[in-house]
Length: 320
Image 1 (cartoon, rainbow, N blue to C red):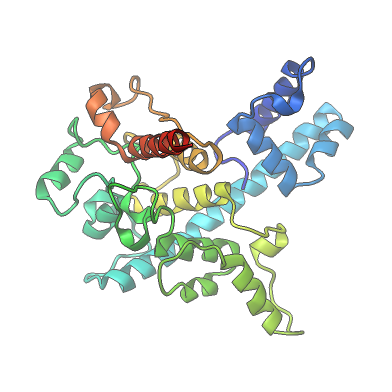
Image 2 (cartoon, one colour):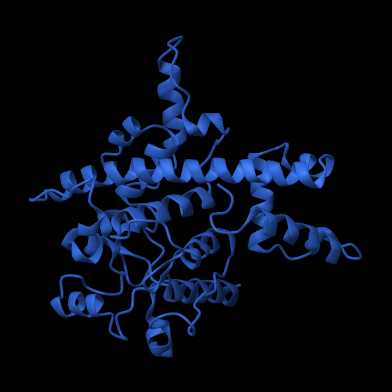
């Protein structure tokens, strides 16, 4: 809901540092970093958090943060376990697989599996091209799967318009199903018959609960945490969860081959929170990244979408 990879201690430190830097200036005018926005999001999710930090001594604060992190890690693991089984079922049903994708074996997922590979494939490439498949498997310099490409599974109907990369983004059926499964209930995910933007997910769930009148039901996660709308960071969390479940990796790591989950999460959050999301690519230092040319980087869909947004803004500004 707030941050996926930043330590709570770092989040608090960055918040304190921001206030120290802005003490002589207008605080409202000070630029807001992603970490500061994360701190605000955390304080909204846990209204008592900020005051507790001020009231407790250092040892009690440390104990509180440990408990929060343990709870977050446990929830993260539970969500992964839930989606690992459900996504296997959804993929089997939607793509009519034979043999079926097994819920207890992730080694047969990822780019080793034709459908999972298609969903994970960057949108700028055609998975049906055997040359593309072979190049992804071989991790050749022109086909390195990185966080700066939107995969097919994030798009409505698993297709996109190259001239309008924003259309249908984060509106796929599998994302709506996954969001419902985690934040409302696994059974509610069955109601996602088609693709959509998920705007009514929480409202529809509340209406369904109200229809039960006085019948006592188990509260969903959204109700427990007082979540009243689909947020950018909750979307980023679900996208990362789905990406991991579709992959062949058996345990969570920030880096999966050449793919950086932290950078991927940042790109999604930037898409919603930053009017001009920048490419968070780090060309040097990891795996095959040093082999990338500027031309290859410019063609990645995250970069291309940012350029389209800039062009639209420039056109709107010039028309005025």
